[in-house]
Image (tube, rainbow, N blue to C red):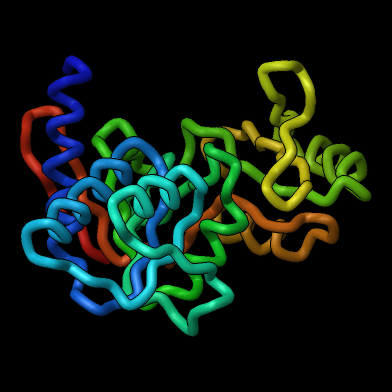
Length: 231
């Protein structure tokens, strides 16, 4: 499928998600190519219907700028109590609607927005679908102070760690000043067990396993259909 056709499908899925946004609600907005179409669809609703939102929080500066350019005011997560709906993308989604996120490096903020949301919708194209989580290295954000110990520990556990690097060959630094270790073990071994292990590993700030969080996935298929899957 060519990119133009794929983008049209993403736009359709994004518009479907945008129509689920209630006026005067608190909205969480993720990042990525499909989410960019979702933001455009919100702007269209604002122009055509006068859509107003109580608060918006985002997981990236790119989404923040796009929303502000469309006339929306963007707040910090710390300024609000709870998000009514978060719309985001995902790097991989399995049959149980569990996912891997964090390919863009914003997993800690994404996870914090997600756990403070009443409902979560992911918009993806069918290339992100897997039966079992895998096919994409699992991001783990770690503190610089103990990152070498974490890396060796992950090696010993057979998780195939590798440092995330910049194009300049330096370690990628997150928004919070930490490093990312991508775990290339594929498929992800026992996702819930691995998540628990990482949650209890000192030095790990956050990981990209988003389990039992997503309520609905809107999928753009290559045959031109849009599918909604709910937990």
